[in-house]
Length: 167
Ligand SMILES: [Zn+2]
Image: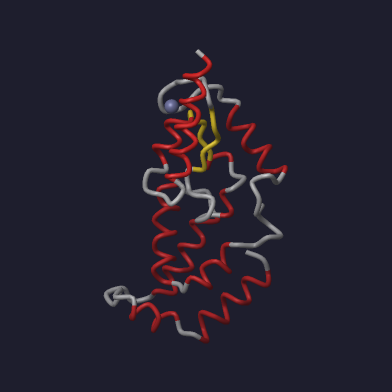
């Protein structure tokens, strides 16, 4: 977190009383939501497994308002906001150097997949450990429950048609 974010976080958590916010979210059985929020942020920033990061993202989404959640995690000075950012291109090339799909072994149509979603976890956009080399088919499957699924399905369909007309 930047100094500015830290200050905002402190003020938000004191002024708006996270405990009260927490209780309205039906998590009444947990005593200290502030501790959970701070721990969740630490897990997101630290070197933890991506399953834990996913769990913390879910917790933070439940505990914080949308606006604050985004403020906390989105820092344009720290993280790329465009996939054309040269740092993202470099990240993707590095992931793609695996040379084959890490799910099915296919060596065609490889794409760099963010394990914890781009939109959920800006700090993971350039993290090598947050990447997987997947073929277009497996990548599409990986996003089955995301909003982007229909877009990826379309891409896969067009790719299949292209192969058909080429042969
Ligand atoms: Zn595959």
